[in-house]
Image (cartoon, rainbow, N blue to C red; front, side):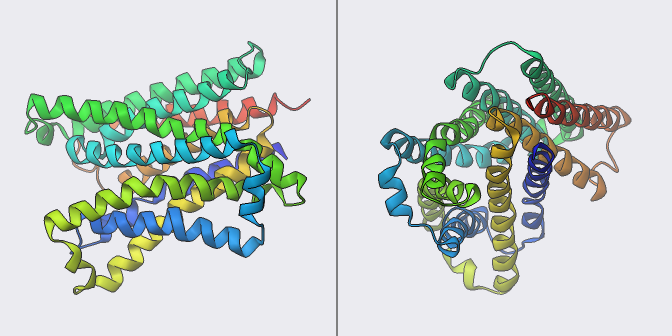
Length: 336
């Protein structure tokens, strides 16, 4: 059971680390075109399709679930939507390496610890000590990868004005906090899944009804922002232009990969024990960041990097692997 949860969290991170790769292969579309198709696929079509295919009556389940859990799913999901927008802006300003490091570092720490505090599970024992050690190790690995990325992108970074850089750091901080809110909201919405299980649905099916609420709510600010940019930049017509079929397919693939990571994460947490959301969150994020950085190496992004930057990246990857091992081991200590 625990092993299955760890494996699902790892595969969740794998999908999360791969989901941005198709974006590098899309030509002729602007960011808002890609992001709109991605969001509609991942946050609307995929959760609605899975819930419909598995047969639960979401309306009846939400009516039977605690109203506080339903409200948390909607509120925290909607708030997370702004975090996704801020993440896109921070990447545009600071680049992928540094923005990912800052955002994921904040998200992993807050998204792991706050659910423990809210559920009053912050009791110092061997499992918590090992989990905290994993989180600290992960933050160290994230810092090393971020420093390596900044060294690699140093020339481009010098073109950013001090004011623009300051705004970018605020975007990163806001995105990291709001991304963590996604996991906090999921933790508070778990009574919805408990209600579904009592009504006879499987744990996976019941959990999917949480994602249906949270992702649909989170899609609202993203869709509105994309439509605003498409109107402002007059990029709406690009979606029917030459190369549109390829761009549509790759954007949909992005949505399937990221959406898959969320549903796999939801399947993993019940198998990881009472501290499932706090263990699964950093584990999935660590694997995702590891995969993203390894893909960068494989694609040759570090081929011309300075030796110091490449060395820092290797240290960062090794540290993230150690964090994955610590987080996965902490889940074993929860077995009675």
